[in-house]
Length: 168
Length: 328
Image (cartoon, rainbow over all chains, first blue to last red):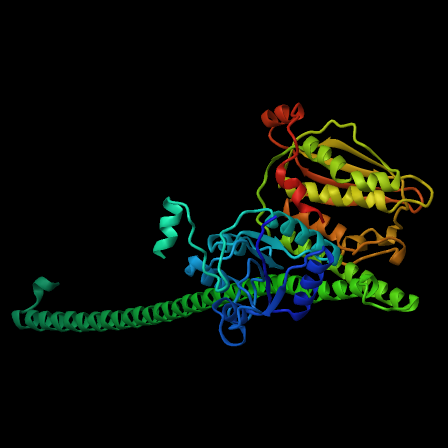
């Protein structure tokens, strides 16, 4: 288990899905703060700590993101692109949770850096099962540590990794 | 007598002869001119006719070109409309699932969430919403499967019936256990020309129907066997189930046709997928059945070329990986 605080952000344009995903996370015993964001524009505002998300003591930088793909305006791909263009703020894992089985969508999402891609299960039980697998897996994974703004912390070790991040 | 003519008489006669000759000459020239004029008129008339013909031909050509252009435009329109329709069916089936997920999700929350304080009646209603949503979801996914089988590119190759039949046993494990049914497939399995995953789906639908529409209290037995006819292989799928009255034999292959209402679950799309798949592979499908005495469905596909048939007969390779993707 990772020994630092984590925050989950759920991005979807369907408010019903936002409620159901949060409920599913809670029903499998997830205690971390969950912020549900309605659409890509809100998601990017959250990442950037803009507007109502400027208070990082409340809206901590996420350590786990699930995002829908097909959203009006700024869609899931744009969210992935945004994260990729800010590598120091990239979130691991960034999980795509969408209704689309389209092969091009799957390819594009991975090209843009999605950690994994899942089609939304049709039942609540299926959704719970899916999220449990993801959460159980990722809480045991070591991921880069970030500060409250989402910037990855410089590592202490002397080596390529440390050098790379100290340059950013 | 001429010898007796006097010189002046000779001159007169000569002159007369000359005049006669000149007149005749004149007459002949006139006749020739007339004939010439007539000929020219005829040539002109002919040329005019030719011109008219050429004009008509040109008009005809022009019309043909126009017609071809119209046909091309109409064909393009039809193709576009067809594509739109495909996209429409796909997006309808796809987009309808999102609100459905919500309905199912919240209906489940109503009955299972600890914060929910529903009475027994309330829970029953919520369960009904949930079941209906599940049924609609099955409808949509079958509709998607039907639209996929109608649109996907057909790639004919030598398909191994033995591999497909083997994979059926595995895929139908649950249904076989639940119904206490049995699958009897002694073979032999000649290789056929088919799109393998499509054929797998067709046979899956036929066999699972045989297991589903069983008589109450009679464990279903579904038999699969083949029969080689001139150039074709006929696969029989026979069951000991309910049977189908003759007047329904055509109807059952239509979309959304269900003969038994709520007693037997289903969406009425399974046999439509069978017919569409077989049609797209250039085969035939039919049924022989008497109510109460089971049904015998058959499909016919072209036999695979002999040299490959020999190999496929003894083939023990596992089912194609894509065969399992097409659960209806």
